[in-house]
Every structure is written in C-alpha cells, then in structure tokens.
Length: 464
Length: 83
Image (tube, each protein chain N blue to C red):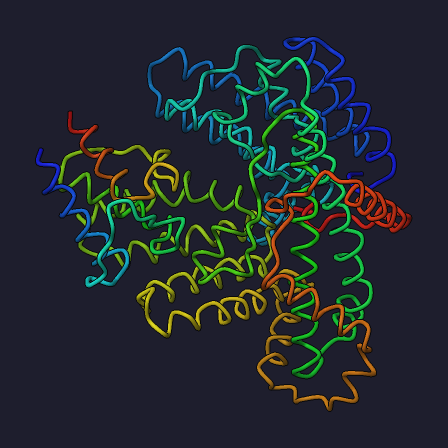
C-alpha cells in the first residue's frame, strides 16, 4: 500500500491537504485518526480492531498511572496488555509448536491468524505512552482522540519510525495554523528521495543481483559476498527509503518524526552501528530494556562483574531484537550474532586512539553483511550454507564466471551502492538548495521513481 | 558536595572503565557519546556508578546523548541531584 500510486498520488495528498484545511485542535486530531484507520482498512480492514484494542488498553492504563497509586503494578499491566496482541498474533503459533503435541491445537489455531501489518511497530509506539507516564516524561493525553491520533499516525504506524509519546504528543496537540513553505519543500524532497532509494536503487539491486544469486543456491566465495553486499545495500536503501518517506510525510503534517538511520555502514564499531541503524527501534530497546536490566544487575552484583552484566544485557537485548523481527530460528541467531559482536567489541577494549581500532570499521561492515544472510535466507540451513561459501568452504569462482553470472552493469551498480554507503550522506543530512535546476532534477527523479512503481514491491520491513 | 572531587572521580571512572584508556585526558566539554568515545549503552554503568558513589539516582530516560554527552553535563546532573 505504502509504495503505490493510490497512496502517493491520492491518499497522502488528500490526507495532508485535509489536515491543514481544518482548524487546529479536535477536528485535525479526528482527521488524522480517520486517515490512519482508513489506510489500515485499505490494507486489510480485519486489522483495525487490533489497532483499536492496543490504543484502548494503553490509554486505560495511562489513566490509572495519572490517577496515582501502585505505579509499578500499572506499568506491569500496561506492558502485558500492550504487548498481548503482538504475542498472540506473532508468537503464539511458534511458541505452541515448541510444546509439541500439547501445543498443536493452539499452533493450528494461530496459523489461521493473519499477522496484522505494523503490529510490532504500533504496539511499541503505543507502549511509550505507559512508559513515559511511568517515568513522568510528557503530559497525559488530553483525550482518547489525542492518543488515537498518536497510535494511528498514518505516515509511520505501519513501519515506524517509532515515536515517543513525550516528544510527539505536544506537536499533535498544538500544531501551527499553517505549514511553512520551507517545511513543504523539505517534506516533498524527503518523500521523493525516499521513493527513489526504494524503487531506483533497492528494487533494482533486488531484481538484478540479490534475487538471482540467492535463488541460485550455494555459490562460491565471490558470488556469495556479492550477493550479501548487494542485499545489505538493498536492505538499507529499502528501509531508509521508507523511513525518509515517512519522515517527509510527517513534515508535511508539521510533525517531527525521529531519525531512523545515520549512515550505519560508516559506523566505527558495532556499538556505533546500533546507534545508527533503525535508531528508533534500537534506542527503544536500549532505553526500556537494556538500561533497566543492566542497572538492576549492576546493583544486584554491586558492580563487581560489570563485564559479565554488560555481556548478558547485550545478548538478551539483541536476542529480543532478533525475535522482534520474527519468531524464527534464523532471526534469533541473527540477534545472538549481534549480541556476540557487541560483547566481543567491549571485551577487546580497543582504545579509540589505537591503530587497531581503525580496523574495526571495515571489519564491522563485513560482519554486519555476514549477519544479513540470516535476514534473507529462508531458513537456518540455507544461511549456514551461504556462510560456508562466504568463508571460502565452497571454493572460489573464476573471474569469468562471476562476470557471466552477474554481468558488468550489475557489478558496477553494486560497487557504486557499496561505495556510496561508505562515504555518502543519507537523505536526512542533505540540504537541497531551492533553485530551478534542483527543482527540475527532483522532478525528473520523482518521475523516474514513480515510473518504476508500475510493479510495486513491498518494503522489506512491512513483514515485521 | 565538592564539584572538583565529583568531576575528577567521574573523569577517572569514564576514562578507565568506559573508555578503557586511563591515560586519555578527557576534556570537560568534550563530547563522549556523539563523538564515539563512549557508546550510549555504557550510560547504564555510569548511572550505577553515580548512584553508588554520590547517592544520586538518574532515571533511565535521562540517560541520553543529549543530556549526558559531556563531563560538564554529567557533573551538573550529579550536583543537581545532590541538592
């Protein structure tokens, strides 16, 4: 739905124009909420009660927190109720299957449930209301409508960026009467750049390199690395492209959605990678899981084993980030793989000024690329096979075979994408000058990106 | 609470335990997190150190790069909590 003509040329313009045509306050909140639920109904109307249930549960718990008394009990209730739909729809089936014959009835019933698109994102965003009120960050919602507009915000509720209640809610309540021209330009530019990243770069990489090489099964060393590097680039341009579109649409509504990417492949080490990749999710887990867990363990052990506490907290957090993406063995291993990298990074204790620390950047990029294989492969066995190939255990193809299988144009395209990711800025940092030439260039880019949308490809993160 | 003692105690802890480079001379206004010297996950250790050394509790949501990026900011937060 998001990368489609209906959404980009009809739904989004009407939703934005209607928002500014209405007076600030209740009418705009109602319009925003209606837009969110309409979009969700267009994707699949059966999902709308789930969004409504998550909204009502968090709002009700928030009222209790504001009323005072037993804040920890209400925090616990809020977390359980807020995550219950996510657990039922996403994890009930796999969890029941683990129980064997005893869980088979539940597993079969769970198979009949379609996973509501975006549930992982809006469940987490809604939960920030309970968590922020517990920590006394931000003011309570003025009304159910105020909160419903936050949970169903159409640019972002399906795939983020995950906003925090304390930062976004004031803007929803007191938007300006009119949108500034500068903000319109910034919003449109981000939408165009986001769409171009998606259709021109990500979808092309998928079509000409990633899909053929992954479908071909076990390759040798070179083709496996080309496939993995191309997939890493594709994943970035796909998700960063979506995020830029969402942030751009947010700006067209006068709302500041949080940054989601900051040149992640230029990270100096793995800890920095997680401060640059899917920032709204990784910071959510850091603030609401890693900090409480690691602080609790440090207090419990009286800071006698800080390395062990840090390691355990990292592994737990990354395992849950892996499972947040999906209840599969491959995604759990992906999370544990990153947890292990974080532990290794801290155990090596490389001083930032040392020569060895400079090697961490290329090693981090290659390690992250190695890990993406788990994201793409249909199962753990396929991923392990590809990892073997990337370690040279399936042999090395001659250069001529690489050229025949991939082709010069595709190889140059992958190389250009990889170099760009190593040295280029992302759309957030681009400051586009308001000149006629730039306007024409943006128009051409928009036309090309829209033209390639004839065969729309869903965003990778929509399945999470 | 002696601000100079707090500052030097925090400086020693950050360079020795968080940066793993005790010889590094961390400036008062030098950015620790946004510059990559310390990763934001380490703020949990810093918060527990502050708790145990100075008896000041810093809530989780305040452990951000915006609020705890420099030694000056951390010292100010500790002194504010001790008031």
